[in-house]
Length: 358
Image (cartoon, rainbow, N blue to C red; front, side, top):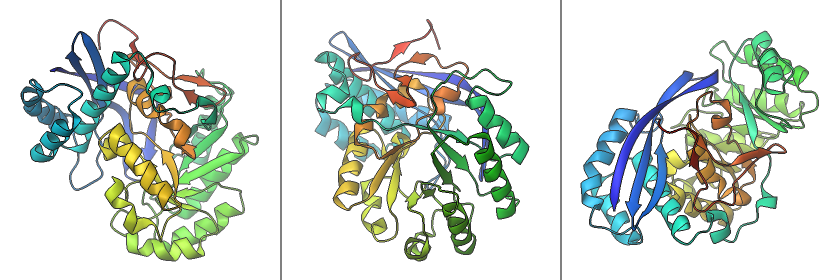
């Protein structure tokens, strides 16, 4: 198969601030594989958690290095490809880009969308949350109004049914509480609100916030403690009135067994997992251990979110809003309907190009 690698930069409508920093734009990588006159598309986006940051430059170098080795391999030879990935120690983001492209190629080769190939039902897809980054109470209140179409900035969305609120402010839990109350004030009709601290709390502050947030009908808390403090999650698991999910603490299916006795659910992201193949494995391992499953994203375009949306009928919660916050997304894929990101009937991952070039 022939592989092409191309970078493209996307800009956020609203910059996103979390406990680790702020993101306003990213440069992602578009991967195309070609075999037998059929193209498969994939994407990689940079992220900073893990043993070392996976930068755009590092991901591109890895893809450029492995492309010649894949030239003599057919997209259907997955065991050979997986063995090559392992030998090359390919970073998870680079693996994900190729894996998504291979799945897209497969779906196009048989003229079926992946969700249909896997026998899934789109009417089981739950609403996706829209993320509100760390802000002042006034800023957070305005941001919610903007998303709901009641603010000063025109929103591209309608029928938002769920919000995710980023907490873990460096200014402490008093700032978190003030911001959260401002969000609730602006969204009195949103029943599903979750919280993500991105590792910004200690055990003590997490427990205090769990009880405070429980009184305000929050659905669950995501990544309350920093990655590396997984042993401390046990105390939260037994004492928190709210379910505990992890994101940064769970990369692949190998992460799950050690988390089963201390969390209620995991956040699966294609950049961490290394693609759809491992994401599907993670879903099965998690559900076999009675864990809930959610899907999340980084600064991903419609290409990436349309790919993971193929598996959305299997998810308990969804946070696939990154492409909805882009002002220059070069791709068109899954549609936003009734608060849900719905994959199309087009074959593969169902993505087309919005314009002629990235």
